[in-house]
Length: 76
Image (cartoon, rainbow, N blue to C red; front, top):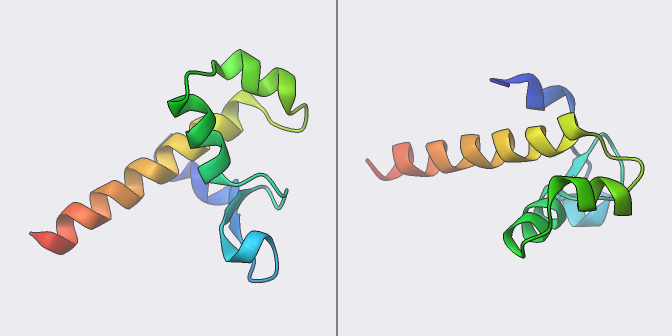
């Protein structure tokens, strides 16, 4: 996925308190990651949120991986 997440993850100051959202929707990256961490499958998330796609979920994971990479580099 590399940097393709950049076209799917949006940041808008007035939406969800400026948290990273998916394609301008009110669904945040945090929401999706929390659902995955709680044990929901991708299929369950897609079923519950019809506006999301498999690529959106992959973008959330890529976004989180990039943030983690930056944190490690900042400490090093």
